[in-house]
Image (cartoon, rainbow, N blue to C red; front, side, top):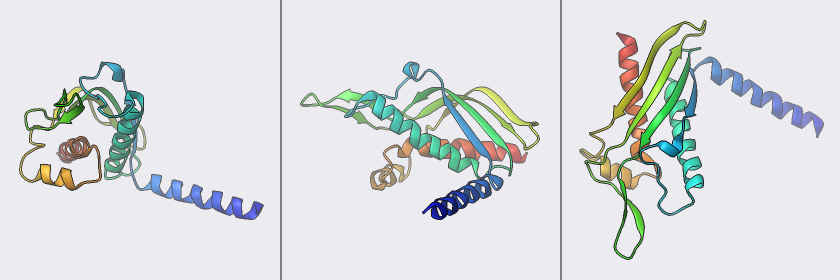
Length: 170
């Protein structure tokens, strides 16, 4: 029993070390979320909703950072967030998020990307990223078919990373 636990622990440690060698690390800080433009829950407790939202978005930031230069580190502080859509009271008194084209997701953030030695590769403050084209084309169909409750928001993060990667290639 003890040997099995040690083997499992060593295996998990090896996986953790090997995955960090091949990808950048992303650390996300959600600064003062009570002041964000819109991260309102519609059908659950606000704190539970916020925890779920930030968990999904943290995973997306981490997933996208894996494509950055090996050994680099990305520190992100999100200072404002506005989800796609608008929370409204609809017929019957229910509260729901209505997603239409002119209520696009956006975020404001500060970030610093450093290489393995700690040298700054890129750094910006008060980046206001808006995904104004979030509802164009077949995006709304893809969102309706997705199991991701935060499809538009994770897509916005992928778009921001695509711009960051293009900028780093210059």
